[in-house]
Length: 114
Length: 113
Image (tube, rainbow over all chains, first blue to last red; front, side):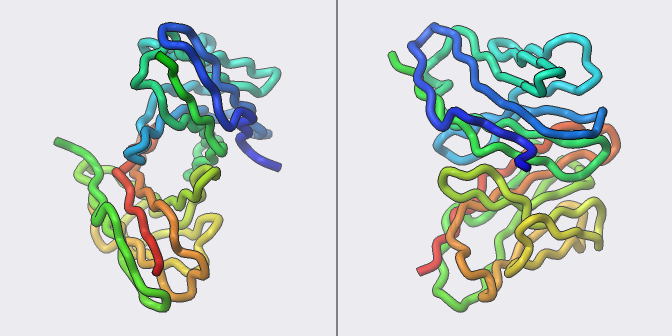
């Protein structure tokens, strides 16, 4: 089974609007971390936000927030007030417990329309 | 500035040749990783290393080899045994104690002619 599933290959959003990128995960480990990365056309992966499985609050970093629904095993990324520079690929990832390996989804391509 | 460098940015090789991709970090991170990215797919782990002189295979290690002789360096060799080596290769590092997220280099795009 896939550890991380991103079901939206491509998304469009109007500039200044909010957008939600979906991510579901699969693990039986009670301790895990969830990550979102942005990959612009240049190729480099940029870390955006982290959510730990024991964190009580949803993570927020500036215009990025993570809608963490533990029972549903979902960790959706919300980008508020979209900007043209947000156009990129977005990847959800997970690390289980104290393991070394990170599992990545297939990504969502976001296009911000002026 | 602390960070991860990968060289070269673009690399071309003839079929049947081995090629080595460079990855250097000055973040004093213990763990280093190599990923392969193909169009429409996420990142797939090739190899990772927790400490100097130690490394483990990832999900797609066949046809690749690595070394970790220094903490700062984790070169990846793509051998002629790798059947479809054309891809984008990303190197990452992470602090071992208390390290959370991975930090990535700019990537190397390898094309086999």
